[in-house]
Picture (spheres, helix red, strand yellow):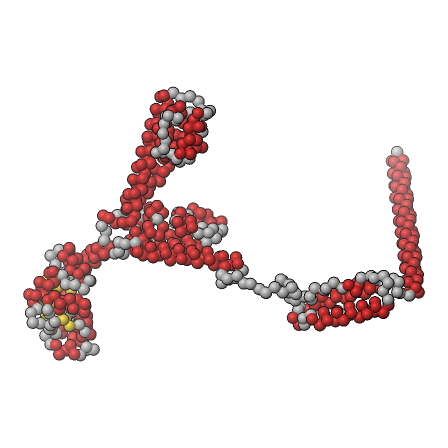
Length: 572
């Protein structure tokens, strides 16, 4: 049995000397503990050396794809006739068996044999030292990683960075030139600036018309719609602009030529940028568009640098100044940077822009990594993620509508109307009282009828009290308040019933009530007089006290003056 072993220097074929030892897999590692014991198990039969790095790279890439290279096929045909071949990859063994008709083996014993060969490789292959094997493996790994990244001229993103920078500069220059044309020609025809709003169409009209006197003779149907054209010709007839010489008009027309040529070049540059973005970053373009994707790449420095950034960094890329200002002042950080100009964020409502920009940044980070490091060249991943984001946007908007309708699940909650229930936390209240006609004053009513009416009102009150809910369902404070209200209402109703019976009541009761009222009035008048007298007496006492205080002050001043005079005399 032969063993195929791949090395950075080439392919090696080893002959197994004693196949019986392969049956003891657990003890096979002891056979490779030393170089002498390893030579007793296997022996080098043939070695195919790589001529250069490109050949080694081709062979390694083929083996990674589980396919034999051209050089390997020649090597195996020359040395493996009628032999079984042990391989480290079962898929590679199947491919060799199909193409070369060589029996291949792959099992645990073969994998353990490969580990032993790898440990004693420099001793088993003469002329291959450890100092030579290390740089070979390092160079081959670097070449393989470059090949897997596929740095082709089509993947160079510096062209995108330059193109988007030039496009922004062209936009600024076009805006400046167009404003200069409007201001310059506005002296001659100021009304044209309000009639024609677009800068490019304005430059075309000025170039074609030159002087405003030519407006009536010319046909602007290829530039303007009919209603705008008629308005322009009417305004040209009654314009308030000044007269301009032919030399000035010639310079204005040359400036219009510059504006139109810049606009045409900008359109060509945009088409070039669009094609390059679809080639280099198709999935990013499908998610955010050509201009936003190109600005992200330019801001990150390159597509590979941008692929190293997380989604949170992609989300605020372009808003660094606002971010650091917010961190310094301890305010809310920005929710989006360059992604604000993406169509998905523009479609969202103002409250949803932050959520959609976060989701879009996460998907854009995945798309950037796939474009920078993946093998695919289509935009299927970007289109799929865009569809998911659009579905999420619709879901968020629907949920917001559901909240506004009054339910968390998106369906409005319709409650049965109950007139006896308050909206707040007060709970149930007593039902509204119906109108009581028995409380009205009716002349000519007999005492018996009034008594009957009173009994009816009392029975109705009892019924309403029985219909009210239990006190356990209502808070203690609200129950006390309701009881007080009911007592007041009862007092008012009893008073109304008493006043509603002037003719039927006894005259003695009326007279007693009048006497009691008179007594109350007299007592109130007496109390008022007493209070007035007390107030007067208190005022007089205060005045007397003030007089005594003034007299004491005057006496003290007089004594002090006399003492000063005596002192002066004694001094003299």
